Amino acid sequence: MVEKRTAGDHIFDTFNVLLLSLFSILFLYPMVHVVMASFSEPRQIMNHVGILLWPDGFSLEGYKVVLGNPNILNGYLNTIFYVVAGTALNILLSSMGAYVLSSKEFPMKRTISIAIVFTMYFSGGMIPNFLLVRGLGMYNSRLAMLLPAAINTWNLIMMRTSFAAIPDSLAESARIDGANDFTILFRIIFPVAKATIAVMVLFYAVGHWNSWFNAMIYLQDREKYPLQLILREILISNSSSGNTVEAADEITNFLGQLIKYCTIVVSTLPVLCIYPFVQKYFMTGVMVGAIKE
Image 1 (cartoon, helix red, strand yellow):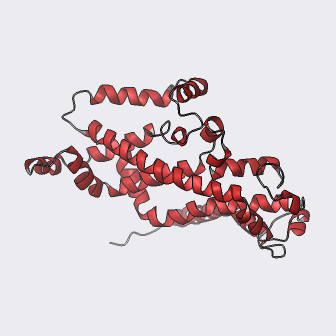
Image 2: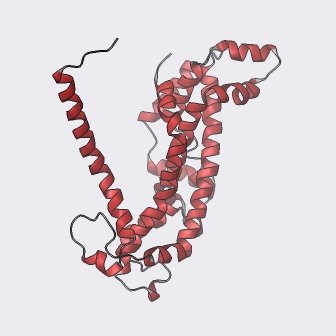
Image 3: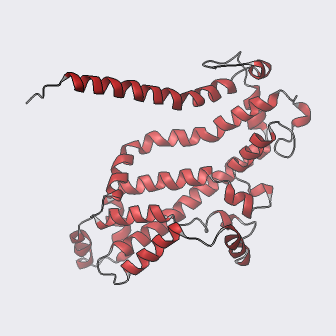
C-alpha cells in the first residue's frame, strides 16, 4: 500500500532538509577551516581574515615542525598506551560488573546498583581524589591515568541493561554443559552483545584519547604526558616557544598559529578514522543498552 503524501508532509521534509543542511554546515565548517589552515602558508594564514574553504597558499612546514617535535611523538605513544590499556581494563571490569548485576540469581544486585548510581550524582571531589591517588602511591604514575577512571557508571548501566536483555536460556544451557561464569561471559555474552561492546569500546577509547585533566593533576613527569595535555599547552601558549616545542630557536614566531592547527589535525585524525568501523554498531548498541527490559 502506497501512502499518499500531503502538501504538509512535503513542506515538513523540505524544512527538515534545509535545517539539517544548515546544522551540517555549521558543524563541518570549523573542521574544514582547521584542515585548510594547517596546509596554508604561515605568513598568509596569519594575515587571513574571513572564511577559509581552501588553503591560503600551500605549505607542509607546520606538519614538519609538529611531527619533528619529540614531545608530540612521545605524547602520541603515551596516549596510545593509555587508550589501549585503559580501554581493555574498562571493558574487562565493566563487563564483569554488568554480568553480575544483570544476573537474576545475585541477591544484592539492587543494593549494589543503587550504590553505583549514587556515585553519578555525588563524589568526594577533586582534592579527596588527589589525596587518595597520592596515598595509594599512584601519583606521577601511569596507573593514575588508568585506575581512577576504570569504570564509567553510565557505561556500566548501559552494559548491564544490554546483558539483562539476553535470554537466560543461553547461560543455563552453558552451565548444564559445565561452563563457568567466565566462559559464559566471554564466549556467550560477548558475542551476543557485540554491538554494545563495540559502542563501549568507542566511548572508553575516545574518553582516554581526549583525557588531559587527570594528567594535569596526577602527572609531573613530562615523559608521561598524553598528547592532549601537550596540545593544551600549545593552544594556551599560542606560540612554538617554551617547553612544548624544543625547536623554537629555529622557528620564527609566525609559525605559532600554524602549529596549533596542525597539532589539532594530528591529534584528532586517529579518532575520526575509528568511527566508520564502529558506526554500524553504534545505534544498535546504544538503543539496546538504553531500553529497560
